[in-house]
Structures are given as C-alpha cells and as structure tokens.
Length: 258
Ligand SMILES: NC(=O)NCCC[C@H](N)C(=O)O
Image 1 (cartoon, helix red, strand yellow):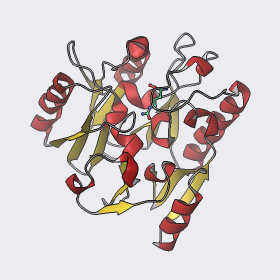
Image 2: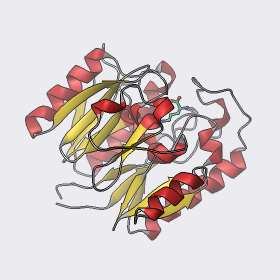
Image 3: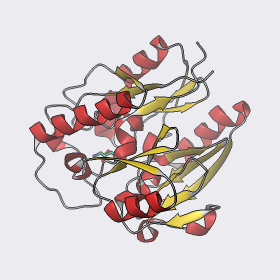
C-alpha cells in the first residue's frame, strides 16, 4: 500500500564531533546545521511527505544521519548494525519508531555490520555496497532478509567513498547517477549516467518526478533539468562537512502495510 511517511531525526548538539573518514575535518556551524535540517524537513513536507521524528539521541553526534540505522524493503524494517561502533546506540530509537508504525522488524546481527547508506533500491533490485562500513556478513544477512520477499540483492565494492550512496543513487526511471571518480565499477550498473559533481550523484525522489538535491551540485542540477527532471535544491553544507548527503537525512517509508 503506498504511503508517504519519512523518518527524520533532529541533529545532536554534539553534531560537530561526527565522524569524518574520507575528507578533511571542517568546522561545523551547529546553528546553521539546525536551520538547514529544518528546511530539509520542510521541503519533504511541502512535497507531501509526513515527517516522523525519531526521538533525538543527543549523545550520538551522527544520529541525524538516520538513513544508516534502518533499511526498508516493503513493510520490513531491517535494523542495521552500523559499521562504526560509535553509531551503534543510534538504532534503539529507530527500532521503536518503525515498530510503532506497524513495520515488521528484522535485525543485522554480530558479526554483521551494515549501514543504510550502503543500500540502494531500484525497483526490486537492492544494491549493497561492501565497503568500510558494511562487511560480508552484513551483505549475507541483508540477502537472507530481503531475497525471500522478492528482492534481487546485488553486492558491489565501495572503496573510494564512505557509502555506496555517497557514490551512486538512482533517478525515477532507474538510471544510476554517479560521479566517476567515486565509483569503483560503473560497469556493474545498467544505465549509468556520469555527473560532474560529487553531490550530483545524490538524489532523493520526492515523487511526481521531483528530485531533492544538494545546492552544491549546480552543474548536475542543470544537466538533470535539461533532461526534463525537476530539481528541488536544498543547502546541506554543514552535513556535507561530515560526509552526509541528502539521502542520509531521512528514510522514506513508501510501502507501509497499514
Ligand atoms: N548515509 C550517509 O550518507 N550517512 C552519512 C554518515 C556520516 C557520518 N559522519 C558517518 O561517518 O557515519
């Protein structure tokens, strides 16, 4: 049953201490981050999404990146076991939120690790990035959770960026967008479109053909507009300083069974 709910999680006051792995640390402006987060949430609402706030986790600097803690497939919420130990406390609140929404809940167990940022769904194909945060056991457990439900799980290597979705996401027609220097094996993806900017590879599908994108990818926005897409830009500069992108700030629940 189609639904338009999106989980979001308010930034921790300790956001500036969030993990940085592949880029140089830059000072984060917390007040600006809060404003940007409000504007991001408002943009979702303006496009028909009911936002559901997961209880804040003030002691977890990276908790705003809610996408990493749960992967949805149909009505099943797979609670992850984040690859970074400092992020493991984040999952409890998310589990509570999805259970309250009537999802069927499943879990990634030790020794598996998996971050939601490593999972890209394109129809019933579920790409999973095997990289710094997601290990082989995590990939196997994801397969065991979703293949019986009809998913085709495709594992792909990720070595150049934090997560698979830091490298690639997909347009509504299934075209995979990626910035070539960040993608390990572009040939693994059918219908690959190279984009000129890092952040140009990140789109959130708002519905009705609209694409939520970072304001830091103007050339890609132009390219996609020229291809007949409607781009909705948001400024998320403070989250980008922590290797966050537009996808990681929400989890869209499109197939709730309720
Ligand atoms: N899915 C995502 O893109 N998550 C971004 C997580 C950033 C956070 N600083 C981390 O390193 O875990």
